[in-house]
Image (cartoon, rainbow, N blue to C red; front, side, top):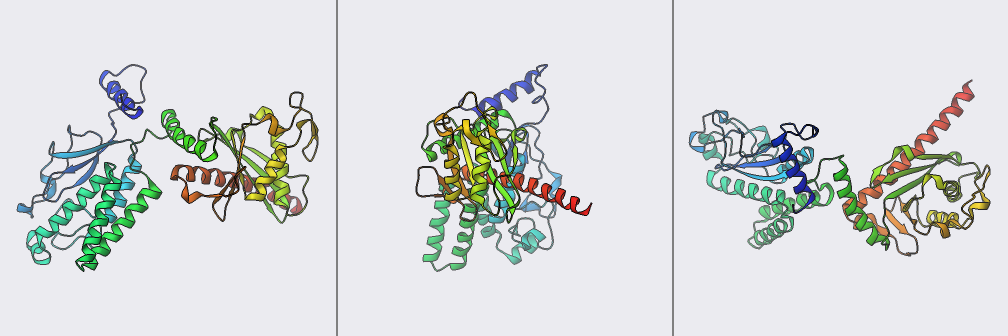
Amino acid sequence: TGSEIEALLKEAELIKKYHPKYNILMRDDKHYFYVGITREEFPRIFITHQPQTSIKYPVSSIKDKNRPLNTKYLILNTKYVGPFTSGTALHSTLRLLRRIFPYCICEITHKRPCLNSQIGRCPGCCCIQENVATNKRPLVSCNIQYRENIKNIIAVLEGRRRKILAELKREMRSAAKRHKFEEAAKLRDQIAGLKNIFEHRRPLEVRLPRGSRTSTTVRWRKIEQILQSLLGTKNKISRVEGYDISNISGTDATGSMVVFINGVPAKSEYRKFKVKSVTGANDIAMHKEVMRRRLAHPEWQYPDLMVIDGGKAQLNAAIIAMTDRPKTLNTGCFSVQHPVLTDSFRTVCKHILLVALAKREEELYIERKSTPIRLKKMPPEVMHFFQHIRDESHRFAKKYHHKLREIKYREKIV
């Protein structure tokens, strides 16, 4: 096969065909998702598991508008786009696209415009009875606009993003030159809506089943390649640790260490720290202590990348902690003796990369680089990955901090 997704699809097809004894996960009657577009005067859009086999979907007929739409069914006369493996993402995408390119989902005709047409989700002429439709809006022009919407939706689902954006921009400029400013404004809104989908949601790609080992590996490979380019390294990046501090004016200060392996949280390897050697609100010193105490535990397995919550100062604190010698390391409550590690952490752990993520500015500070990088300029997958680490480390540190405050409060009551 040409790709991993094709191999997975072929595997599922063969399992359903031959029903092997031990392959139970893919032996059900469900298939991957397809989007069907009927070939009618006003095409319909629907989601199905089994294209071109047992599809049953109502077909409309403009010539017989008074007939309920559910009296005739479509078997083969449909265009299919797919496969897609995430039904949730597909439903979400179609829901968003319907706001930009309205299409009909009504099963019967109406004497009055439907609610969807009143809120801009339906053109309003596709499901209304003929005698009403011809008086309110010319059916021919409505049909042309409707088919244009369907064509654009198909283009998005098939991945032709740049082409459709270029076409819409060209149409917008043409409408503006012809002084059709309402039409140009509508096209402008469609372009903005599509850009929002492409930049933030990204649900249109054909993906492997969420949670499977294969899907996790495929997603992480892409993120890892971008991280290697961003951080200027050829080393493998598998284990990533995130650190944060939580306190109120220096009281009940806690630190957190969260672990992500191949992009997935490994909660059994999370660690929490109660800050012991720092008094007062000194975030830099707290970060330094937490880093020193973490580095004193080589049995936890050192990471490939450390993500510190904070800016340049917090990053420098982590760098200073890396220069400590494990043999004389003071963790704040005891000295840790290492029989193996006798040099500085930086010498022993040359592969560890250090970055700091500033919350307010959403900027990433990288060791040995003077200029930070804004998260918004990164690919969405990497941006969301860093945000996930930051949010998870913040949540874990805050949870332990609240627990310490609750214990202290109960002791006061007693």
